[in-house]
Image (cartoon, rainbow, N blue to C red; front, side, top):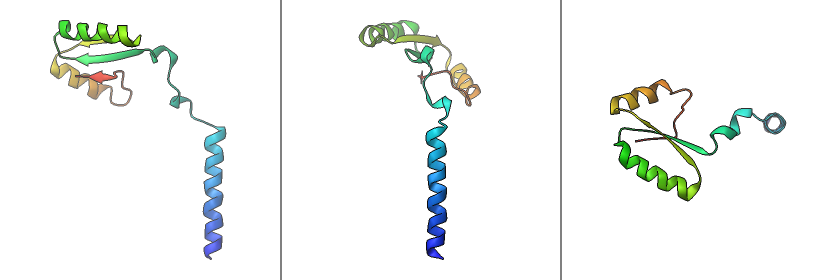
Length: 91
């Protein structure tokens, strides 16, 4: 009984492993157009964040897209994008 159950479990494991290896999901790969951009939703003053963002862009080569919003608007937008987030950082 034990060996039969063990064979069934190992068989199921190897089948699932083979399916995962030979049929990978496409969503796991980063999209090329978003790979070099960071999106920030923030309620900070634009002057402060633009200064930080420009230094970050110079140091890393990654473009920063800053979306200035009021605090409540940031929260509303994050909740609306719950299933498909469009933001990398919110502050």
